[in-house]
Image (cartoon, rainbow, N blue to C red; front, side, top):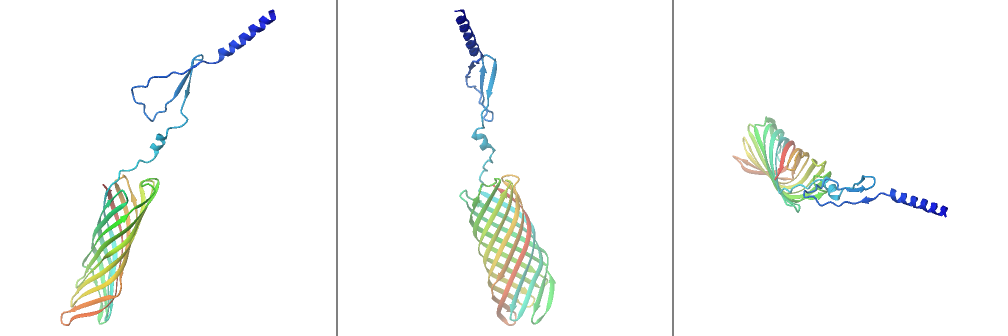
Length: 324
């Protein structure tokens, strides 16, 4: 009997000690604070151990999705208008030739300082209207003239200028989100342009104009949010007309012509509105066979075939652009 009582007492002590070692956990629910909880702080659950007087802190396993989205770049405000001013140097030459009688006149090594203004209107759907106007004045150059019945002559350029106007309609395709880590754009364009040059020496003047429709493509590759490489290529169909005035006669040239313009550059955007650019331009024009009309004071008008007129120009300029 005593053995049974001893075993029962031992079993009671063991079970009682086991229950005593198990911690009693309690959860406390607090009223919501009147102050707003900031979304950038982690919410934590605190569980108190009643026996050991300790607390267990349980942190969330991951941040909420809103914190992930906050790291992504914020979309910029859309700007409907854009404008730009640029200035720089241009080197060009123009050569015309007739075959009967053979006459070749070359306006060479013409150095020009050029200024240009751009304006664009953009819609969120991708449509855009854009145009530019430019003017340049010559600072140096020369003219060489070779004729079948006259001696070769050479003179310095005394004055001259170039002007150009262009307008276009296009649609912009975005490849990726603008101003993200990397993105691109493609913009087909159709437009109309007018280009004019006037060269003058001591006893010679030549004024030429090229005007007509064109089609083109602009493209850009942006990276690191603030940087962009860009370029364009335009193909032109033009009506060519030129007037010349020399010491003993005046002349008129008429022909159809083709031309192209290409450009490439780099743009840096310190802000979402402002940008700085460096641009290289090249253009080439050539007429088909046309007609030359000579106006001689004593013999009236004489027509002869115009073999060709060629013009090419290379330039570099710096630009400041703004969106508004």
